[in-house]
Image (cartoon, rainbow, N blue to C red; front, top):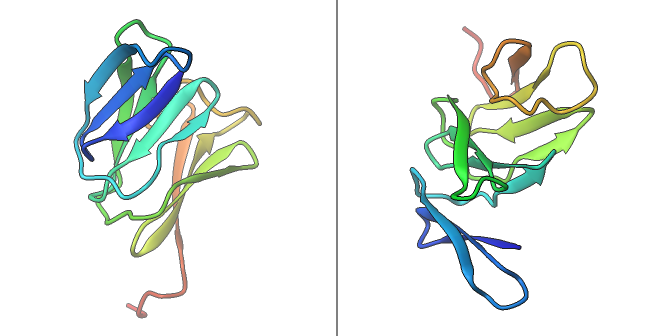
Length: 126
């Protein structure tokens, strides 16, 4: 399987052997960040901070969750310590399960997940 963001607003899955398109999803873009694959899911965050979780194993691909960070995101998310880390223009977000070292297979704002926004040191004091 080959996955690629196409036209900055489409996500397509193709068979790596022959290039046959399996499915294509219209995403809410534009995107600067690369989709991140973990735990059988794709994490795609657009420039406006909308994080969408895609299950590429579904026959037509499927958005299984979304979370709006409400801030500009240009960089690709990363994974460490069982959590997804997303850097916005003002904060570093940690998204992960509360009681497990595994990445949650449910969407980021589901029961049992936490969303922590930490100070990055670039903010002015209140």
